[in-house]
Amino acid sequence: MPLNIPNLLTWLRILLIPVFAAVYYLPAEWLHPHLVNLTATLVFAVAAVTDWLDGYLARALNQTSAFGAFLDPVADKLMVAAALIILVKLDRVPALIALVIVGREITISALREWMAGIGQRSSVAVSFIGKLKTTAQMVAILLLLYHDPISPVFDTHLWGIWLIYIAAILTLWSMVYYLRKAVPQALAGK
Image (cartoon, rainbow, N blue to C red; front, side, top):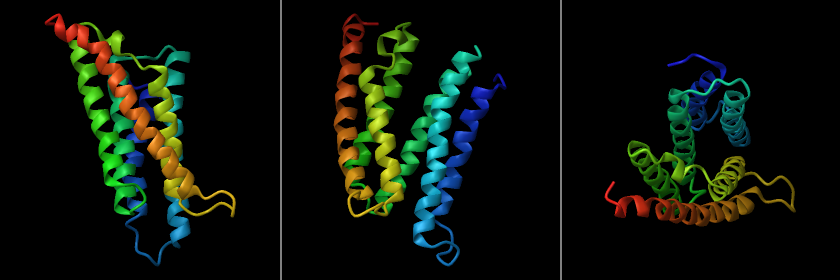
């Protein structure tokens, strides 16, 4: 495992997951509910920024590695799954939406692993729709974690719910896209 800045940022993202989750389990008298939401949102936002930053730095500093390529998507999926589990528990996201998103992540991770095993990983490389899905998903999660209205005009929960539904639709669309890319390989018996 190469110890470089991008990999350290990925490890930081993984270490932030229990910190993020613990905020919701602090004794009620320690933090006002608004501060719980704000703190969790900020921790998740820092983790989301490290997701972008580690990839950027890996390319810019020429510090890409097989280990980093493996660990980065694992960290992303763990972070999103933890946030969705908490949001379901808080009754801010329907369980079905969380299942769709987490189920897709597991399916596509397995598909990418299989495609890499047969030397075809590039055929299921991240697409524009996958990036769009990730953006909608991350913004939705941030809004739903914050939960409190920012103003009478901007209801974070309402916007977060709309975006998480859009993210779920994009999740299914991108899953179909990736599966269609893999079908020729499966039919070829590889």
